[in-house]
Length: 507
Image (cartoon, rainbow, N blue to C red):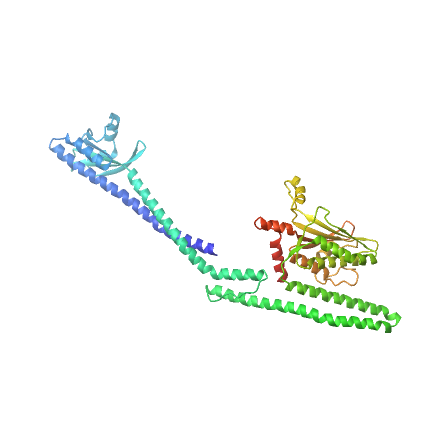
C-alpha cells in the first residue's frame, strides 16, 4: 500500500510539473528568440543609419571599421552593400562567389527594393545555423542607397534555451525528490493502520493470540475493517477454546465410565451362559474400541493444545526401542517384525514433537498387525533422503557421504490386503475405515499419525507395497540439515514448513 500511495503521489506531482514546466520552457524559448531577433534588428538599424550618414557625407571608408566593431560586439558578421548590390564594407573577407550569393539573398534583395524595413531569415553556413537580418540604407522610394545584412549564430540562443530546459529539469527532479520524501511520510502514516491489521492477521494465521487492533486511527473504511477483524478474531478464539475444551473434557469424562463398564462386563463373565459368551466378548471388544477412540481423541486434543516446538529425536533409537516392545506381540500373532536402519547410510536425528515418533510408530505398527496375515512379515526401515542434482547426477552419491540428507523417511510395510488409490487418499480422514477392515479399529490412528507428522514439519503418506500390502511412509526433516541451514544463514531446512503446518494444526 505504501508503494502504491507513493507512486500515486509522484505521478500526480510529475503531471503537475510537466503541465507547468513545458509551457514555461516553450514561452522562454520563444522570448529568447524574439529577444535576439529584436537585438539584431536594432543593430541592423543602427548600422544602416550610420551607413546612410557616411554615404551622404562621402566617407564610405569609415564603414569597414564600423562593420568590424559591430561584428566584434555582437559576435556575428556585418556586410554593407550599395544600391547596385556591390559589397562596400564587410567585417569578414568573402570570396567572389560568396559576394554574388550575398547579393542574391532574399533579405538583401527585399532591403534594396525598399519594400520592407527589415527582413529576418535563417540559413546554415558551414554547418552552423545563422540568423540573418537585413535593413535598407535610406528610406522611401528612390532613396535606398544600399543595404546592411547582419548574421548571428543561433548557438548562443540554443545554449541559453538548453540551459533553461536543464534548469527546469533539475528543479523538477528536486521537487519530485521533496515530494517523494513528504509522500513517503504521508504514505507510511496512512498505511500504519493497515500494517497493524496485517501484523495482527499474520499472528492469528500463525497460531498466535488474537491481539485486538486499534480502531481509533485511519480512514473510516480501515476503522470499520479493524473492528470487523477484532470481532472475527475474538469469535474464532472463543470457538477454538470451546472446541479444545470440549474435546479434552469429553475425553476425560468418558474414560472413567468406560473403564467402569469394562470392569462390569468382565465381572459378568462367570454368570453368563456359554451360548451368550460370544455377545459378551463382542461387547467387551466394542468397549475396548470405544476406549481406544477416546484415547485417540484425547491425544488429538493434547496435540492441538501443545505448543512445544519440534526438537531433535534419535529416530533409530526410538524405532529400536519400539521394535523390542512390539516384537513379542507380533510373535504371538505369527507375524515377523524386522527393523532395517541406515540402509542408504547412517541415519541422523530427525526433528519431531516430543513423544510424536513413539505415537506414530505405535499407531502404524498396530494397524499393520491388525491387517497382517499369519506367517507374514512387517518391515520397519529408515532411509535418509538427500536432495538430487537433476542436471549433475554424478554428484548425487556425494550427498549421503557428506551427510547432506534433508529428510528421513520411516517406512512400515506389511503384507496385508492393501488399499486402492481412492482408499489411500481417504485413509487419513478421521473415523474413516476401509471396507472389510478388521474389527477393533477406531479410524483415528492414521489421522493422528498425519497430524503428528505435519506438526513436526514433515508429512505422512500411504503407498502400494511391492508385497501387495501397504507402505506407510512418514517423512521428517533432518535435524542435522536444519542445524547446517541455521549455520549458513537460515537456509530452508523444513523449519518454515514446520511452522506453517503447526499453525494449520492449531487453527
